[in-house]
Image (cartoon, rainbow, N blue to C red; front, top):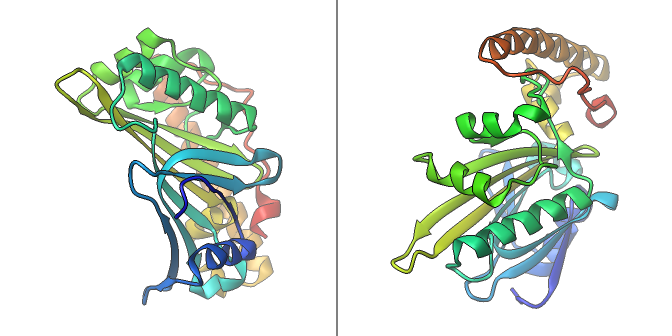
Length: 265
């Protein structure tokens, strides 16, 4: 792959055409019913990728690998998942301050592109005031709009044996799971970081969590299955939030789950 070119990839059928254009149609067809399409780069010639999503386009730098996944049983849905491995910086090793600056720049880019916090319906809606406390205890950041200070960033990385933390974001029918990990330190006290992005359609996510096989359901059955899942999730959230309150966490009662049914049906 050309490290100077910006590779634009879409969800859906257009995504299959995008990969075919860049790879000459190479597809890894697995017996389990998954088709994988892949772009790769080798350091130091890393890639630039744009995941096209309307007003929420996501441009990523320092990319090693992009893999698009298509379910063969739902071939008409096209690409439903992107898995992306990238460096936080172009250089393999950077100073702690350079790493922090790259992290802050990445979060600003995500916020400017309109990617917002996202709770699964069964999850505790941790209040923004407890964002750092929760991240420190659980390695998961609930509020992407808050960019840690340098001291908070170092505390997150240095006080835990696992040197990574996780975000879940959402924009118009797409869920973005992102993990940021410090992978190595060298003798010069420089650090290496990896960022992993998994983007998937909420359609795939919701249909995959229903009881039963959505591929075998009628439209009415899918609607009922979705309602059942929502009810089950809401009951689980109520229980989980009571437990979180006992641990001293505040709940964001104003957070409203996005309306995703229009993507699921």
